[in-house]
Image (cartoon, rainbow, N blue to C red; front, top):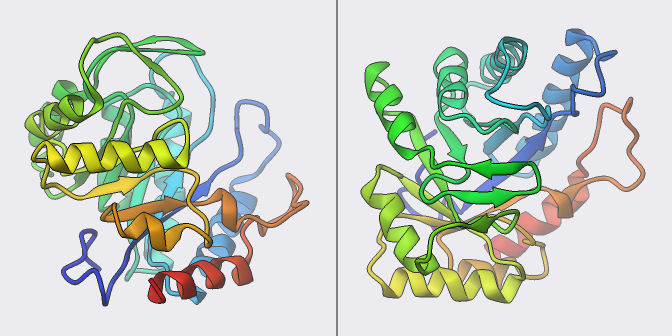
Length: 263
């Protein structure tokens, strides 16, 4: 399926984030378990009609993604795509890295990547991060894979920008530097909506997704302002442990999808 919907009414722009375990502290997990894990949770989303799924590496590491992270994530993504060829697959890695997500997407057949701190340097709890835009766009072109869409976060809530521009100006800058779509997430749900409104008022016409705090209760309000949303936490099973295969709840996902179609 196409990543960007042609008809938002018939094909709501909802992206489910499927988080992998943090393999920096879970080295005991086998590839067999991880393959079963991604397939089982992919099925939860597919059963409820969510077909855009972003595979999210959570391996905390200093510097760029390691070869192991790239290999594991690419393998799991390819398994997801092979078993479910109709999904639109996305990739995000925990490491601050412009190259790894695109390389993983290329190898796995993914349709899009999400890059945080795309423009403007920022301070995070793990240190200073520089912008990824130029390196990402250049590498994507070198691979001749301009068909892999880039979702760029704009002043993500987990960091403090080190550049004195407004979020809407940063959004315009992200588009200028090659973002195909934007992810905007403020400190609160209401701030997120305000930032999205401001970006649209400033002339941003690329699709904007709200990147956090989206629930079945506020999805209608979300889609009245944003073009789409990234969902995950609200759909998770309560009490799921690290050795459980299923971490997302079918009924919770169905409630959200029902709310989307009722929006």
